[in-house]
Image (cartoon, rainbow, N blue to C red; front, side, top):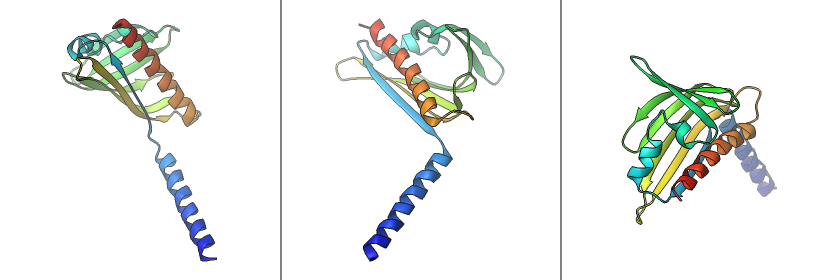
Length: 162
């Protein structure tokens, strides 16, 4: 009898914790790829906040505006949709940004893209983000959408350096 009660309590605690975690909300996507180029060469390709259209196959244009307190890019996608992103931080091997307007099924999206070196002189490009699903969309749809965006970009980048 005690074992059943303990098992039920443990199961209840696990379910409660899981539901609290999903309610708190931050979904995450983390992708990385190794490319056949030095970190310096790779960063030259992806390190400019206004050059996502150079290496991501879905982005056809990027327009940069700089205000007194912020740097913003408006990305135009192949289907005509626009995504507005604000630069949060930038250094010699990474930058972070937030989506401020987008048709994507995400809200509260913050991301970082970075480059690091390997022992054999190649580069590891890492793209990570946290976000919530936009109201009316399932978590799975939000995660799958961002995963698809990252996979397309990183695969294109890898092909560029073959």
